[in-house]
Amino acid sequence: MIYRVIVLLSLAQLASATTPIKRFEDIEIGMPASSVIGELVQRGYAVRTPVEGAPGRIVERNGERVGVFYVDKEGLVTEAAKSIYSAPPSKRGDMIDFAEALFWLIRDEGTPVQSDRKDQRAAATTAILTADEIESRLPGQTFRRIFIHTKSGGNYRISLERNPGGGASEIEIEQITPFPTQPK
Image (cartoon, rainbow, N blue to C red; front, side, top):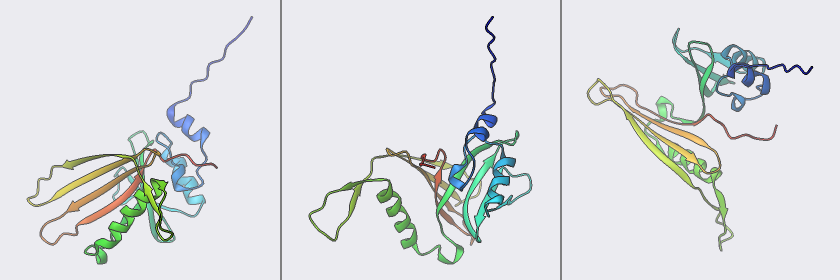
């Protein structure tokens, strides 16, 4: 007689069983948040919840924001976003930092392009761009996002939040899950 044993693993068990977390980019959708937090803290990251009961967990290392991940009611990761650029309040008027972050995103995701000039390096990036806007109930407040999905597998989100009446406006570039797989 032949017996077959079928083992059913939940998405969370499968994700946690297959990928140890050595760096932020190892976070996968479906992982148990408790395991993610434990492993990140073991590796020197700080993880905090900005508002009690909120789904987001901010991850920092050496006082710098690394990214954020979101958790559903079952305690599983639903999304992770690695910070590429975030304007601090003192530099929100200085757009060169944002423009350079966008430049490097496009260049690093691209394929090198031949140039006749020795001092010029160029890259061509194929990407799909989508945009959305979240309605606000406050006059003058806007929240807009641009999503960039590159042919090489990179997924990015640019968030633009305008707050009227002296409120701090925000601009941010994040790499979002799924992260491209890299050799371990």
